[in-house]
Image (cartoon, rainbow, N blue to C red; front, side, top):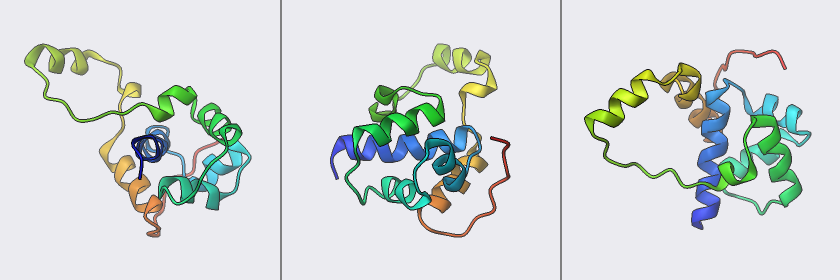
Length: 116
């Protein structure tokens, strides 16, 4: 799996978790099949840029955001304080992320319904 595929895969899963959206809900909003979202999250498919654009739009991010690598980095106390002051909407709830990861892995989950 290339770095770009890995970044896309992770960023779609995290993006869904951030806005508490199931694969089916994202698929509907992006006008693609749920299976397409599933294949992207498993890095099991090649994808056209038009589909990536629709997914980015549905998640409220840019195409570049979907391909941005977000490797773990050590942070100092100043950065921790900055993050603590950042609005919650800018972060992903860990439970929502775990649910999205489970769904991406094909495990049955009960994500809360979100109005589209």
